[in-house]
Length: 440
Image 1 (cartoon, one colour):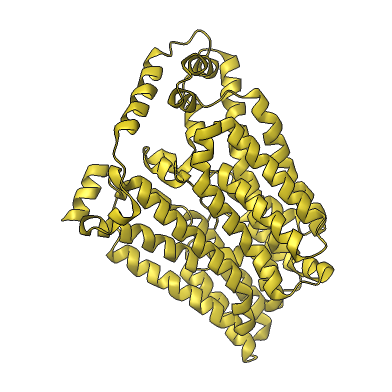
Image 2 (cartoon, rainbow, N blue to C red):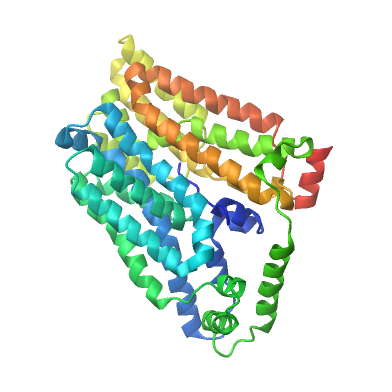
């Protein structure tokens, strides 16, 4: 989902993961540390449990994204919030996430991966408690930005859809306060779980804790496992990073980097301004505006098809046309079904396409010396777009429901042309071949 995605470097997790092979886009460094063969059942348990604790941040991310969809009407009525106040509440999550993403690399480098996860969990719990006890917009927004910061630090592109679906579904049967309390659960489990998992061997090696590094690696691989080869590989990798020169943001605007930077920034713009965050944050109001007898039905169906189907353009265009028909009282009995079908088609398509593929492409197009700076720039564009869309959605819907979806479909259509004309084919090609093709 719109979310989809995350993903950040020593400046932000995005760029750190971009410095690694392609698989890093869909799993974290800590998860990678946890992978590998083990000669003991005990170490397999450590690997599995460590991975589970690490990806709870992704489930929490999904819970935060899905929180606003089923509770908009109830929370606005209970706290007497205006559209502007609720829009700020919904969108401010992305501001917190952006700050968390930008600072996460420095935090993890300074205090370690385990403590960084623990800090994120504490912030998440604090944020959800603040939302639960909110009597007005101020505490509500403070809680939302804290949860956003927490997921910006800890989340990876795993389990987000599951967490979002959970929030969608549960929000149809419980109050907004109860739903806020359920957001604490993954944070609490993560906070308790980190007590029983080892610190990241990569971080321990990076800060020079050789004895702890050996112990952590043995705990993950098994006491009788031969870790010498893997330990040497990790040490070599860290040494290489230390001696590697890094490009700054200004270096990205050199002529030789213009093509890959245009691709990276362009894909993020089309990903976000296609409307994903607005649609996913405020599903309940979309279905209510369309006249669906029960918005709950639409949300439950969306949970069932989160990861399939095609056509973000067709989905938005279908919903836009349905709202236009409603404006002119044409075939009004078909409007709810057409809007539901369009939104289902859009979300399913986004989940398997524009929501994740841009991150994959960007791991392959940037030369190694600009991956850090380029990742930071792309990350900022991503989060700014997420905020802009989620904040303006309710205002756009008040202006024109059909116009809103036609606008999003226009961005989706432009994305098709952009990908066809600008983005290089990456299938079956090495990184060197891809980058060479962009210079020719």
